[in-house]
Every structure is written in C-alpha cells, then in structure tokens.
Amino acid sequence: MTPTPAAARDPFALSAEERSVRDTVREFAQREIAPGAAGRDAEERYDRALFDRAGELGITGLPYPEELGGAGMGTFAWVLACEEVAAADMGMAVSLSVHVLSQLCIFSSGTDAQRQRLLPPMTAGRHLGAFALTEPQAGSDASAISLAARREGDEYRLNGNKIWISNAGQADVYVVFGTVDRARGRDGITAFVVERDTPGFRLGAREHKMGIRGTTAAELVFEEARVPVENRLGEEGDGLKVALGALGSGRIGIAAACVGLARAALEHAARYATERSQFGRPIAQQEMIQAMLADMATAVEAARLLTWRAARLRDAGQPINAASSMAKMFASDAAMRVTTDAVQIYGGAGYSRENPVERFMRDAKGAQIYEGTNQIHRLIIAQQLLDAVPRGG
Ligand SMILES: Cc1cc2nc3c(=O)[nH]c(=O)nc-3n(C[C@H](O)[C@H](O)[C@H](O)COP(=O)(O)OP(=O)(O)OC[C@H]3O[C@@H](n4cnc5c(N)ncnc54)[C@H](O)[C@@H]3O)c2cc1C
Image 1 (cartoon, rainbow, N blue to C red):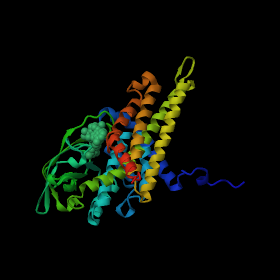
Image 2: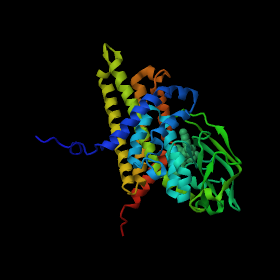
Image 3: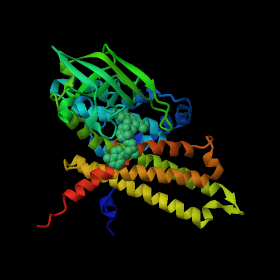
Image 4: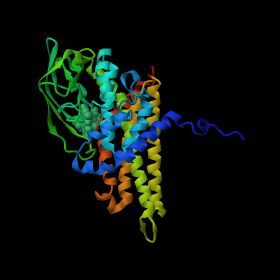
C-alpha cells in the first residue's frame, strides 16, 4: 500500500522548514531559557544575554526579510517560535513579542532609509525594541494620548510620559506615540522612533508586576526630548494607524505565547497527576482530574488552531482584525483557565513558589490585559460581526 503523505494525514502538518524552526527554538528555549526562569521571576531580572543568544539564532528577526537581516520566514514561523519560548519563560516571550512589534511599526510605516538604518541591528539582536503607547490617562482609549510633540525646525520636542512600557530601560529603540495637536484628536497622533540616548528622554518609575517578572516594565519620561524629524514614522497624524496596524499583527505573537504557557502548565499538571497518589492510587486515575486534563488539552489545541489561522491569514495578506483578536482573546483566556487548573491539580503544592505552576498562573493574567484587554477584543470582534450583518430594508 502506498504510504499516505503527511499533509493528507494531517491537514495542519508543518512543512520541514517550519518543523526545523520549531525544533531549533524548542531546543534552545528548553536548554537556555527555561532553567533560569524561576530565578529571573523571583529577582525581577531581565537577562539581556538571552536576547543576544536569540539574536545569534535568528529568532529576533524571524519574520522580517533577509535583505534587512531577518530570516524572511513570516508570521507563521514567528508564532511557532513564540510558543516555544513561552513554554520555557513567558517573560522572555513577551519581551521578544514587543521587540517584534516595535520592528513591525518601522517595517510597515518607515521609509526605505529608516528601515535600512534601524532594522538590521534589531533583526540581528543587537538592538532591543520597545513600543510605547500607554499613558496614565490613555489605556484602552489610545486616541486619548497627550504626550506632546512640538516641531521646532528639523526636530520635534517631546513632553509627557508613558507607563507600563515593556523592555523599558533595556531597549535601545522605542517606538513612541505622541500628538502634534490634541485638538485634532486621533488625527494629531504621530509615531516617532526615540533612541535610548536621546537628550531629554529618561526612565521613570519601574513597575513591580504580578507576573512576567523576567521582563521589565516602566515609565518613560520625556522633558523637551529632542527627536530628529527623520525619526518620525509616516506623516503627522498617521500615528494611530501605525500603532493599531502593528498591534493587529503583533497580538498573534501574544496568542502564540499564551498557547506555549498553557501547554507548559498542562504538561506539568499531567506529569504531577501521575506522580501524586492519594487514596491509594495516582490522582490521574480520578475522573475529576481526568476531566480537568481533558478540558485543558482541548483549550490548548483550540487556542493553537485560532493562532495558526490568524498567522496563516496574515502571511496570505488577508484581513486579520477579527482573526487576531479572536486568537489573542481566546488564547489568553485559555491560558488563564489552564494555568489555574494546573494549580488546582497540584493542590497545596501548586500554591507554593517551589513549583512553577503558580508562576504560570501569574504570567497568564497579564495576557488578558496587555495588547488590548479582552473586553476591547470582544468589542472589536462583535463590531466586525455586526458590520457584516445584512441590513433589512
Ligand atoms: C504586563 C503589562 C505589560 C504592558 N506592556 C505595554 C507596552 O509594552 N506598551 C504599552 O504601550 N502598554 C503596555 N501595557 C499597557 C496595556 O496595554 C494597558 O494596561 C491596557 O491597554 C489597558 O489599559 P489600562 O490599564 O489603562 O486599563 P483601562 O483602559 O483603564 O481599563 C480598565 C478596565 O476597563 C475595561 N474597559 C475599558 N474600556 C472599556 C470599554 N469600552 N468596554 C468594556 N470595558 C472597557 C478594560 O477592559 C479594563 O478591564 C502593558 C500592561 C501590562 C499589564
């Protein structure tokens, strides 16, 4: 009998190249990232050397074209990598996702000269990126930002602050959103690249987070910060388009990270359930534990399929707004449920810092909040659905 080709057996089978990306990143993440994850969480410490190593392996520029120093592999390969990094350490996965997000703003909205100047050091992993949108009075409503950008000759002067900026203090390149005229509302919002040594730009208060503590988040302060006009991305007033366009794609990476985190929690819980005995037999033989494991496994698979679909759509140049929101919302809610159930399966041991599942649970919570809260994603999905409903007449 002729053997069935892999693709016919499994319509979601990976190509040889995709398997190679996944396996290479898995091996690197398990060998070099996973062992220090608990320590970095406890000490709230970012390890820049891991980013450097990710750069050597080509992970830091995976989706970007080879002529800009990337691997030219697209969003799907990126989500495979992101799942593997998050299965080892969600903090590192978030740091890399934000790095890729900041590159996306430059890649999608920058001029050729900006791409050639700014991206190669980022794809190579020499420069780390950050994405700075959130302000004290502008979170879910990004159009309310008030960081002021005043043009003076061939410079802009930036005044104001950003909060909750991941990779802050570590990053070399910050994509920052300000307004050239608050009265213009969303039409005044403008994107800038701010390099770390920019005069008038400094780090503010650091956040002490519940989870993903292996990556930093902090306030950025701008006091007459001098940004050359050549660092403006797009035209004045294009900023919200730059931010929302990048976030639409970037959140597919967050979805993939949530899949990796949930998968790690499931693997730990399943193993523990076979090792821990009560009432004379492993708890894995209790039907209620089996039901939890079954629901957890189903949630991981469903989240992965939504994530892969969004990534494939993006690589095919199809609209992804609802698809990426569904993937991010579902995967982060799934990660929250799965990691909570993993703690439950561990019992008291799950509530102890001696075991990783409590860290996974804390890490999962953030993903329901950043890159758009899951309430906002429900609004986006519902809006797209309702826009498509035929109007009676
Ligand atoms: C760990 C972490 C990392 C982050 N990293 C970054 C980063 O790198 N760069 C960056 O710019 N920002 C970052 N953020 C900020 C993040 O994007 C914001 O926290 C998020 O957008 C929500 O804004 P907010 O915190 O101001 O909440 P708010 O907008 O004040 O929302 C409060 C609550 O109200 C709900 N809500 C608001 N509006 C609506 C509505 N219309 N309908 C229904 N419910 C609504 C929200 O869902 C939420 O539950 C990060 C946040 C965290 C926690």
